[in-house]
Length: 334
Image (cartoon, rainbow, N blue to C red):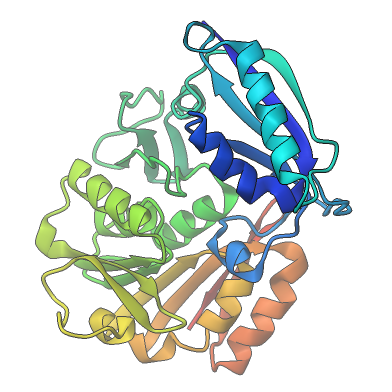
C-alpha cells in the first residue's frame, strides 16, 4: 500500500506551532527535517561519537506527515495547511510556506532492519545472534562457544558495531570467571550478558535511558540469566542521580544517589559510550572499582583517543593496552 506524503516547506520558527495546529486537523505525527545544531544534552543522549559535518543553519525546515489515501482528501488537507500558514504568518516566520504531495511505499520501518541482523562471531568464543534466528554459523562449536541472544528493540547494542566487538573481545580475554561486573551505559545489556555468560558471578548495569534498562532486563531473561545475578538501574552516574526505574535485589532502595545504589567492589567496569562521556566518567568510577580492578572503555573514535587516554591517566588509571578496530579505540586500564 502507498501512503500520501505531505511536505511543508517552512522555517524552524514555525515548527512548534505547526505541530500543534496539524494535530488539531487530525495529523497524528510529523517528521521534522532542519539544520539546527545538536544541543549538548542531545549529544549526550546519542550513541555515536562521529557526526556528519554540520550544515549551515539557514533557518529552513521541512515538516513531513503521512496519510493513507482512503482516509484523507488531499485537496482538503492542502487547503487546511495553506489556511494554517496564512493564520500564523502574522506572528511567526513561515519561510516559503508551501506544501507539496508525493507518494511513498508502505514499509515496516521499525522492523525492516532485522533482515540485516544475522548471527556472527563477536570474539573467539562468543557468538551473538538475534532472538528470532537460530545459530547458523558453520564454525559454531557447543561447549567452546557461548551464544548470546539479543533483541535490541530501540536500545543501542546488537554487537555488530566495532566498539561493542572490542569490548566483548576484551571481556573474553580478561578472565570474567567469578567476577563482579559493572556495565555503564548498558544499552541492550549485551556487555553485561556477555560477562555473565563468560562466567561472571554478578553484573550491575545502568543507562540514562529507561527504555534501554527495560530492554536489557528482557534480554537478561531471554538469555536465562537468574534474576539474582544482575541489577539494572536507570540514571546518570556522572551526575550521580538515579531514577525509579530499576531491577535489583541488592541495592539500597531509599536513595536518589546512583553511586550508592550501584555500590563498590567491582572487578571489572565496562563502558561503551562516547569519548566525551568517558572523559568525565573516568573521574567518578574509582570508588566503584575493586583494588586492582579493570576498566574497559570504548565508543572512542580515534581522533579523540588521546583526550580519553589523558583523562584516564589524570584519574589515576594505568593504561594496560589500547586495542583498535578500524577507526575505533578500546582502552583497558587499571
